[in-house]
Image (tube, rainbow, N blue to C red; front, side, top):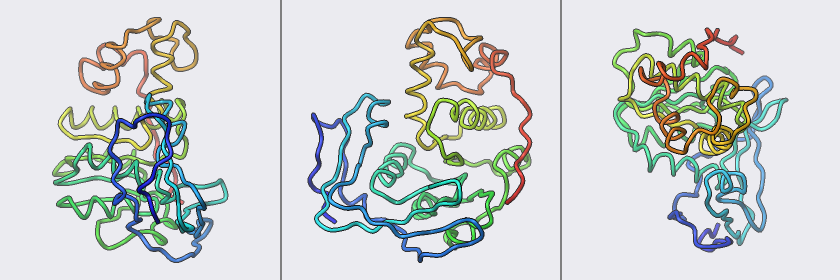
Amino acid sequence: MDLSQFSMGTKLPLKIPAAWYPSPINLPERKAGKVYVKHRYALDKTPIIGLRQAFARGIQPASAMLKEPLRYHELSDKNGVWMTDLPEELFQIEEALAMIKPSGRVLVAGLGLGIMAKRCAQIAKHVTVVEINKQIIKLCAAPFYKTVRADIFDYLNQHDIDPAFSHYILDTWRGTGETTWWEEVLPLRRLIRNIHGAKPKIHCWAEDIMQGQVSVNLLGPHRHWHYTEFPPSMSKKEVAWFFKNIGLPEWEKRYGHMIPMIPRKGRDLP
């Protein structure tokens, strides 16, 4: 696979090393219950930064030209695709690792194909993966890290987790819309900050895409759905503060009453 040539509009403000794109996994095609690992092939061209991510982040999309078919893994169930190891997703993983530099004790929520867990295990002291689905664990777990079968909300509510994790890497959702952020991402961020404060680093998959959508509504004058309690037309500074301080005491004082902390019951273990 040749990823040295990129198709894009203007100069990309990100460095994209080609070495990031060989997948670190090699899983056989197989099935467990209703979950599948399949092999697919990308031909001719494959996205590195997709249109939606580029638009949400205010950057240029980019694609890699392929000189030969690229085999990739696809994790799916009856409801659709959960994850692949296409270059676009590998880029998101490596960009996240470069940004948060996981070390010490790392919690990965959502196993997926096991790429993030394996990469973290290569650079961190200890990695615990929390995955709710036993079929995904059977198909994709590896011995490089500890795997716990549990709902992530139940696991995080165990206040006796000791010692605390230094890094939380969260990916337990399928969508990338603003509703997913309000109903999945925000509650997880808030719960971690409520328990452990500002010290742990938190990364949520595709949150840049989701926050781009949320920002538009926080900055604008219209209030609907999740936004009805917020003041109209928040400033960019206020929006940045809102995202940065989720779950910390001053944030709870300012915004907690607008976003009730509804007790979240753990989902049944499939």
